Image (cartoon, rainbow, N blue to C red; front, top):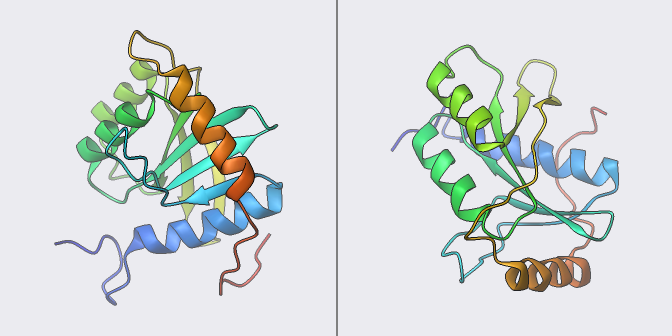
Length: 158
């Protein structure tokens, strides 16, 4: 098992998720972290409801690019938009960036030095023959009803 960038036993993915929660709260989005979607056999890092009718999936990973792409593809069946959320360092392979472009997934970067989050690649609407409108509606309703303010121990940097 790899812990990612950090060597102090704390996963870089965990730190990224903490800051993403703060960022989403600041932006006023309704969201639920780590919700099990049994129909997709996945637990997205974040399901975000934008404007009450757009469901966005955000998946955080530090280094397992193939796994990240698989998660994005699986969750694109019921999410309107999908974003990869990765650390801002030059080790991200070119094939992964090309794959994001080809699949219309967006890219969000986390900068460790100044703890900023930046959308660098716009996501496009997920479409396809496997699109599940009923599941999309069900999850949007669930997120709308059950999302709440999530308190974290992270200092405010924004």
